[in-house]
Image (tube, rainbow, N blue to C red; front, side, top):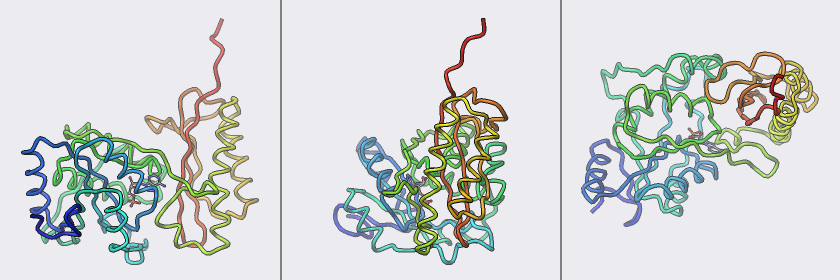
Length: 298
Ligand code: AMP
């Protein structure tokens, strides 16, 4: 019998001990496990990861934890949306087997003093504007992977740099889990779904719809061989014209190493990365781009 439950099909637990007991039982039955870590306020993007997890393993586990260590004091930790009852209903409808929703005290008990830091891939992009962020993410994901010990853990490409940071951590620390990246789920106008989209007023929401369209146009231009610098300039102007007054970053980087694409035409599979502010809300998005076919030198 589950220790605490939403119903007989989905169990909700709040302690590491309870997770371990359930996981040990499943392991003893020879079942495979897939974990989807989230901060809750779930939308279709999160649920697509849960479905992916369900397609990979016998049992799916989702975690809901708004992780204080990845927020700076001036950021939105206290106002971040928390909708646990709705989240549990959504997860249950997806057939999720176990939800782990610990308290901050359970994850960071008194005396906690360890952190995981993944060096160069955490630098630049979100790591530049949120210097505390990837340390907090790597530490909490490392803990969740140790607590659950899943065969698979599913992360969205929406947070592409985060996905690479976690892949690097898992490789570097020999963690026995396969990290799965899942595509970005978008609203009808192409805006990447995000729990933070709820912060936008009607005017900001309209402007937010421009971001993905500008990234798509950039990808088109880069794929036909346009200069990287000129394409970024074009995109900055296009975003300004759409009413996006504050761009945190807009960059083109190697899709695997995150090295800057430099100037001229692209020479390697790349990714366009953007973060913008609309009012106080910071939105991120990214877009894949393949280089134009290059003539072999004669
Ligand atoms: P969060 O709750 O924002 O920490 O996100 C939890 C997971 O959901 C992360 O792996 C995110 O990359 C992923 N995610 C968030 N939004 C989307 C989206 N629109 N499409 C796909 N995955 C997403």
